[in-house]
Length: 138
Image (cartoon, rainbow, N blue to C red; front, side, top):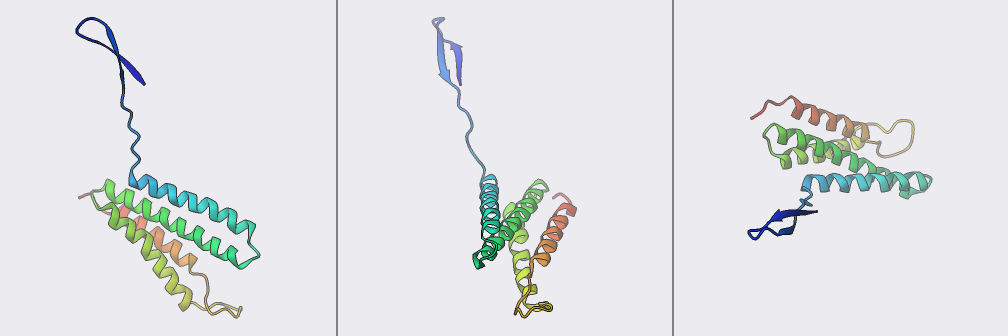
């Protein structure tokens, strides 16, 4: 955008107004997870019958854990805590606990060595966000 200003001799000088085109790191991370989620949904439903469909399903789950991390980080930052630490707790803890539960829980009537740890991951991510929401401001 251009803005007109008067100079000392009375002529108008057109001056370019600086616009802010800075995108925060948090927004970039959210966009990456949104892109991963979109691509993985398409890949999962297109290749659902093949083994690679399972890979796309787990990438979708990874992006959902990323959104839990971003939400925990945003809540933490608004309360005066570290965004990065809250993001790491909201992202990595649910993934690790979901992986552990996949090996510990019985797989059911199927003859699989592991079961899905997705429910554990979702519950853990929700608990992490809830804990940060209940924290008092610094």
